Each structure stands twice: as structure tokens, then as C-alpha cells.
Image 1 (cartoon, helix red, strand yellow):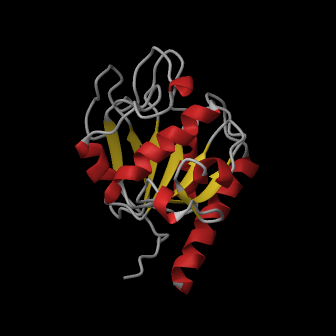
Image 2 (cartoon, helix red, strand yellow):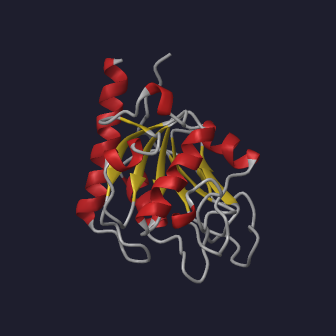
Length: 209
């Protein structure tokens, strides 16, 4: 069955809970805000001393202004790198991972926008961890320069480059990449336009299929 991302007036449920820290309606870790139609889910790292959710909220606001139905999931364990990343990419800090509840929340949607920060090795292994558990098309937004080959090299399916069938390690597929979106700074309009272009390209591909 073909599912098309829609554009319409929408109502936003603007935080499932107060999260694990203070902040009330602010984007705290372990929280989700959802729209009436589960079209697009924007996935953010956990806020902390080095990781803050900006510009994911600006991306969400910009896309909603364009009429897209966009919810936001701030991961509970969104810092660090997954335990299955190579030792050269791992540090001594927290380990990245998804809960069963977060997997279910992402899977309700038709498209994911994943914002994964500024360290290249962290980005690609975090993306693999998310897409391993959720069969969903995804647009990766990052500060670091990454390309489709970087993801395909570690077994992630992409729109442009595919790993060998025996090397595929994920269920989901990367359908777009937008780089040079600096963590903690306002997203430039041209970068927001790139994200919108990726979404529209995905919609056109869905209609053809």
C-alpha cells in the first residue's frame, strides 16, 4: 500500500510529559510531541551540556509552517554512540540506544528526519541503530559532512548507494541527506529548503511506486 505524506492544517499535542528533567513544555529527553496525522517524525538527540535540541525545533516549526504534519521525538538515550559501533568510534561516555516504546513511536510515522549532531562516526552508527529496528524512510540532517557511501559502507540501505544484500544490517532506508546544519545554531533558510526538497522528492517517489 502506498502512503503519501500530506500537507494540511494540523493540531499539535506539544509534549507527552515533562520528560526526565525540568522544563515543562520544552523539548526534554524522553518526550514526544505528536500531530493529529502521523506523517513525519523529527528525531533529536538528548539535550545536555554538549547536546542540545536546537535546531530540531526550528526545523519542525519551519516544516509545520509549510503545511507538513511533523512530530518531535527527543530520545531518552540519544547521546554517545551505540554499543555495536567499533571501538575506535566509542568513548567512555553514555551509550546511544532506543527503547521499545521509542521504536513503536517512530514506526507509527511515514518518514523520519534524524538530527544526529556533528561527529561523523557517531552519526552513521546512530543512524544504523535507529534504522535497524524501524522500517522507515529517513532523511539525515547533520553538522558533519556525510554521504550515502558512508552509510552504505556499514550496511545501511540508501536511495543512491546500496550495500551488498548479505551486508544489509537495517530495515529502514536513507532517502535524503542534508549537511552543514550546525548544532546549537539557527538553521539557515537554504538548509530548511533542502530538507523540504528531500521530503518532496520522497513524496514524488512514493507516488510513482
